[in-house]
Image (tube, rainbow, N blue to C red; front, side, top):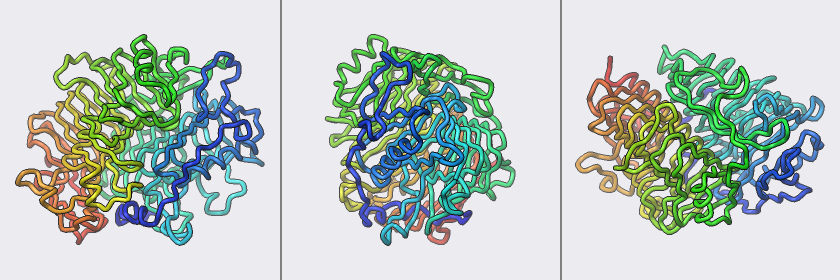
Length: 622
């Protein structure tokens, strides 16, 4: 269970060449499949569309189980598909001791309770993700390295494994990688395992993110990196490369770093929980928008409703993929918030967020795809905007940027007490189709909070490219460019971009867990040069920055297209006392070389150290 994986290699070409089964059928939302229904008492409640299913505790457990089993069968291998779905549970109890509700969650699936508190919806059973076995007829090469894009939130799980075999009965399994979040959970009655150790090997996993949750003993297992924020844990088993805790009651101590590789902050400097849907006592549907907090520890819901404001669903324009952007922008200009129902939206001109405190909430991994080189989401430099649960894809024509917050040289009207917040916002350049952008995420405003983002230039997909073709076709210069001051990122995952993956130019920035893989596909060293310097660092702090903090950062290399390629530094920062990196590492995943960890400090992550991280505890050294 605690074996250190040698790297991410099984996730790339092997996953592609084995031929992923891409199910494209859209799960029926007809009555036999558990039709979407408004909350009880919901005369006049909005129609959330065919890709939202709402369960009632009065429904037979067998009917709910059959609906969710069919959903999983349709989505379990649908990595690059277009179906999106949210399954929402009205307040109540689901499953019994004799007939537990045991849910398996596939791609582009959201499972969420509709209670004001996570304790209002109780699942007697399990909510799980298992390894995918990509060889030998589904029995070999079993791993979680491509278990992306799913969401679990706002409910309680009373773990009940009745009917499962001995290994499966040992825990609630959540074997996932990037772009998967667990939020507002109360799990009891059994252990939580972030590794699926019940299949054949290699069982690797590369997540992940938990926030605002009360958890039992947690088995980290093979998870290479993980961020747990503002939660309670009864115990934590181990670390692999980079396990980070911020504001977590029961978190392990970091004193023995890097063995184990724990980074622990007693409090989270800035946080805001993700907005969530809930049904009030009369059955009306609302969105709770949590308030931003500073210096916090533990869960937000222990003493009652999470602090914040409540917006009735009538304050939202409930959008479907068929709605023109002009209509969406007109509704936003009139003061409406935006609820994106599940689906893929073709965006040929920007969705424009201009009013302070606007909320954009996506359900079921709602996806905005750039068309004609557009910037799908453009946020003005105003305070309090919240963007949550949205995936943004680059399109066939190159975009300048996929999500922009504030103008580069515009007036900055931000608020330290009410930061614009991005929660569970994910980006893709390539993968399901050709994608091109200059920058994925650009933050120009001050006082912005990024709370869990995966910014991914795809290393595999359905396009059928060789690595060299991918390098020349799915183009992306930078993943994240942070120009604003006082920006905080809690859980920033950026991968495979063609120059600096992250460029942080703003002052007084903070990152708590950073994960990066350098691109796999540069054809030659000449294609991977920063002037006279070999390669581009995975994390770059601008030369003029005076103050910056990074807690728990990793840069990985797997240059499978040319294993002789060098990258001089994993991290590149100005040499000034105010720029401090705490617990950083590089690791070789069996191809390519990172010569130093940071600014010429640290040994080479080369072929003599495959899977063995090179750590720097603090830079500059105390």
